[in-house]
Image (cartoon, rainbow, N blue to C red):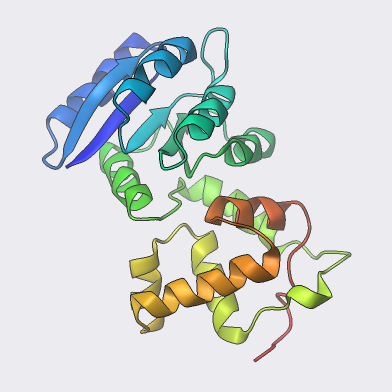
Length: 217
C-alpha cells in the first residue's frame, strides 16, 4: 500500500485526486490540503510515502513547501503536479527536492504510475517535461569536468536515469542485475560529487556534464 498526501488549492482537482486514490487498489490518501501551511502542519504528524504537490498555492508556493517538507522528512518523495512547464520552475522544483514533475493534463494512469515509480526510486516526468530536461542534458557544454568522465556503462545508466526510469527498469533495459545498477549509480554520484538522482539532474542542467560525448571504458 502506497500512502499519498495531496497539496492542491483547486477544490475540484483535489477531490478528483482523492477519488482516484480511493478507487485504485494499492494506494491510500492520508490527507488532502489546500495550502502549504496546512500541509506543513499536518503531513509531519503522519508522514505518507509520496506527496502530490501543486506549485501555485496561496501564500507560500509549492516549491517552498517541498523544500521545507524534504528538510523535515528526508525520505519523503514529492511529485509536482502543475500546469507550469517552463524550465525555471522545473529546475527550481528539482532543486527544492522534488523527485518527479507532471503536468495536470496527465492521465489518471500516468499519475498512478508516477506515484509507483517515485516510490521505487524513479524520477517520473511528463513526456514534454522529460524532453525539456533531455534537451538541456544534450546541449554542448563549454567546460566539461575532466576528472568526472564516466565509463561506457555508467553513461548508459545515466541516460536511463535522465529518462526517469527506476533502478529495476534500468537493470532490465541493460540486462544487468539490480545491485549492479546500484553500483554504477554510486560511481556516478561519486564522480559528479552528488548524493541523489535529483542532484544529478540539477548538476547536468547547471552545465557540468561529465564528458558524455567521449568513451571512457
